Image (cartoon, rainbow, N blue to C red; front, side):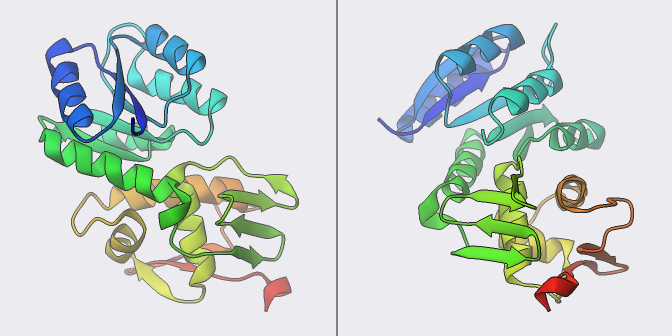
Length: 232
């Protein structure tokens, strides 16, 4: 069988449709209809990816994602959010979702998004290769391990991809649209996705995230990676 995907949604009709499309795509699927059961399922057998509905009774998707991130830091998560609710999408990204799809959605689009996240997490399609270095910061793209000062960094799939891309392409200003295309593989999409991931990455690699020295903002354009003095 292919990759193991845990689908978490209290809407059983939606869950069943997603399951059928994923199984047709070669995935092994387990369904969960509430937060506590999803956490127990992930503990019992860590999945390759979680499809997680944001709005669930009791333990919502935000809290489930937060707890999954603590237990399985590298686990890819695709969040299902309400159409047009930017605050919900940003909240999902802030707690570590790698991608999101808005409801109502095309099951085929969801499968393509899942393929994209899984592909980026796999060594065979990781973008820049080798060990990328900048001062005390390293990203080993073969092992998909990042460290700062010899200490491992807990990065999501997209955070690692973004860091590796920036380390491999320092000194150039990239627009959010360009980063969305080069890192996420999206020709169109919500550019706030990039903004949130840059903010989260700064919190993990900058001494003072509010005054970044590595990932700097280029006003009116986007972002630029500035190598440290030790790397110049």
